[in-house]
Image 1 (cartoon, helix red, strand yellow):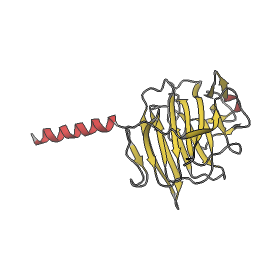
Image 2 (cartoon, one colour; image 1 turned 60 degrees about the vertical axis):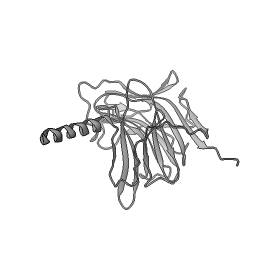
Image 3 (tube, helix red, strand yellow; image 1 turned 180 degrees about the horizontal axis):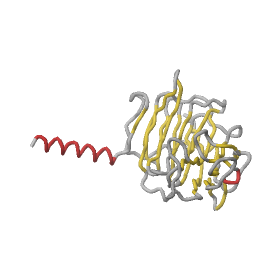
Image 4 (tube, helix red, strand yellow; image 1 turned 90 degrees about the vertical axis):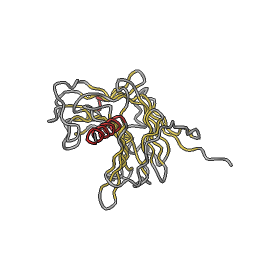
Length: 262
């Protein structure tokens, strides 16, 4: 009887773990807040920067023409960022270029727009397929590699599991991060961060997912949108990965807090 009860308890715990979003961190737990089932209710914001992706705006973005990271398989081409129907299509193709087996796109606001604190909100659709690695992230305008804010990133072999990461450095590299299972990758979702001096809060479709309170960046940062192919984490594409594949972005807004007149 005792053995039966023990097995039953373990089974219940496993079911609960599978059904809930997972919160993980590389360091300790003191800066990670529990997931809360509440909607974002912040109304005291004003838009200070808006990209509706009707066309390519060279005053806001740069299309890179370069090889990807050392373990990735894509070469970034300007032509793989396409604008149509009020959306940006970042396109990964199975096409050889300069020794790489695939091409894709990476665009950035470096040197053209950066932000320090505020609310950042993107509406995007994530591609599915092993070896695909879409991301919307931020790096310091100073050119340093850290800190880094990943507003969203996913690997195509499990696109329902989206990652939200805060990377920083305190004599070594540290990070706090969470994952959240989205319901449907075939549609668009709204991914939001609220970045203050003391914290970063992540939201999906208005629901709070995760908060980091340690290693918060204090400097201006710029945006990067890209779709990588291959690498250590996502692995390489297989015969089931469809090309071309698309990381589609519909809208991007940056808000600042409205100061109280009182």
